[in-house]
Image (cartoon, rainbow, N blue to C red; front, side):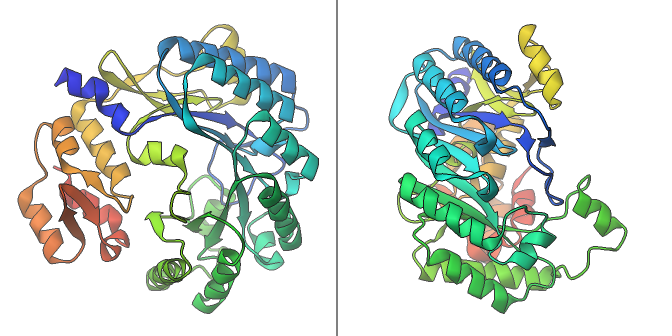
Length: 388
């Protein structure tokens, strides 16, 4: 069983996530580790990332790297030469897949043609843009600094600079109707994109929206039925326009799926570098959860003493099996039942499985467990009924 654990991550691949913790402003719905800072010493941050990359590479020497993702925060606020130095170091530390995907997240307000050209020259192959809405009124409600026109200008620059471009939209916004969302989604899909992420607005504790909601001051949010209708309409329109879902919130043309995010959902290994970054790393046959300290200055200071990470947590076989299901059942391709059994030491309860099949929630095809459209709407309940 130890040999199975040692190699299980290879079925998902190996990725690297780099977290840039700074933004120009904090969005009211955001619960990511992002901070607003007037002054950023880019050279100090570059040196810190380079040191952490070396430390990570020493632990994982020889692994073939499949994908790199610069997330945040707003990574498009990083100086292009910092990005170039990081990518150069990455290529020096690990052998890379022939189709290595390097994604950088960007906000429309921080985009300019020269900057994007420099990112491409640095080695970025894919850009993911946080557009979120295509009208100014809703952008303002969401606390975004850009206008719809600026978003489209930035998208045009990205599309003319990079081979692969994705952007995010949020639906289920205040006072939004199904008809309005249909129109907006069709407009988005008519653009020359190969990937789009569509998230239903969720209200998280500890955010400005969360505080407002608790005080009863965030009105006009959709109820559960309207949210389900919006989700169904989203699937229908995306299917009609050649952008089917490959994951609950992510849609792509064939071959344009985000390779980095597939590593998460296929339960591979990934290194997390930067304040608050999470990772999953198999060493000596044991899988660990890694978490970096979230305060940017604490993390930066910790680089000098090799103390950027909190103590690593061992992930037991049972926990690995649970995580594998939680992540993998989000994918349209589903999960390999034999892999689950190898991780957990037992098969999924046949009675629970049969019950969900009878309800039309899941199917089993060629030893793969797949959640059907009806089950995706209540995915958490489906997963809960499958877990021991």
